[in-house]
Image (cartoon, rainbow, N blue to C red; front, side, top):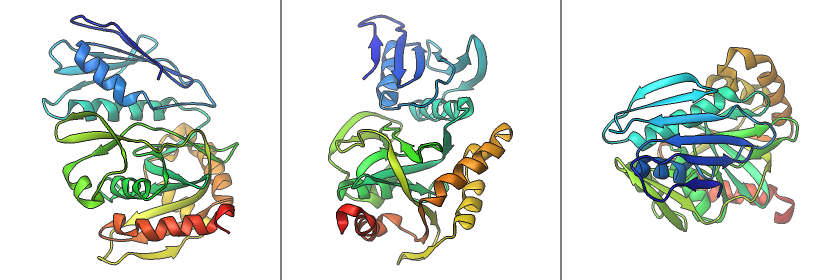
Length: 285
């Protein structure tokens, strides 16, 4: 798993080897090890971002993120929800450190070896849809961050547990087989048993949009999908990466199907979406 920590102590440095990315967490032992457990499934391959350090204050009231002894941010931690705050800031920091891999705020699954990226605004239903797809037989790739290798045309797994809030669980229904690795502030961090073993081809991009009770779908052109990607949090958000993000995303989309799904409850679309992915797979013919 790449996690190493001292067994007992007031503070405990925890060193994570997340593929090619090194992260160190210091602070109260229980907080440091809990954060490390949630982050342990994150893997970065294809480039080596600068090593990252997270220092949590003894009272769990604040935290600082640093690269090469240079503070990038200092934040106040809420008494309820501190874990989600730190997970979010760690993932956001990784996104800023990438120079070759592309990222998008999205979830992803793999079906018969073909990857599907699910993109939508916060609250659009990504997590409930990813959970439903995984319960129905897909393999889990990521929940909140999709890493894409533009050279290989693949999705790199980021198997940080699903962040399941009360309304997410209600929308998803039964969670996929797996285990709860942590819970805090009303959020359960659920790691499915069925996870992708490695990078998978980026075969489909699904863009979630608000809609009615019955899901409606329509195909998107590659140009339309590229414009839609640019409107979401992605590598396009970093000024120094706009050009290579445009080239990289355009290259990946050339070999992918793109679909817009309008629905009030995207999880309800999971059976049809899974059937679509399987039908398009060479194994499905």
